[in-house]
Image (cartoon, rainbow, N blue to C red; front, side, top):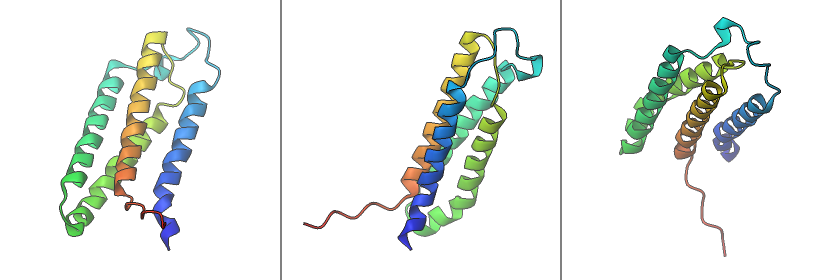
Length: 131
């Protein structure tokens, strides 16, 4: 059943599409966002830490030499990805000044790119086309 290999990629592409849709939605007028919807320095720092955690997990997976080593890391890998998705979900609707909004969008894109890379690297290599 080779079609199950492509489920993570399909999920990543769906998430990326949703991210693009969120970031292209009409913005609220400046000053209309409530105080709890503003990106704080603490949230930005948590995002940076999550990106570093995901990158570290990716390194661990890439450095695993055997399928057994990769299998042992898989639960941690999935938890890291779920934490990243939860964090991005919690960022929907966050507003702020244009600089903060741009920074937030860049961090979300960094997180998505890291997640997609983590998923792509877990997929088996495609067989060479027959000639």
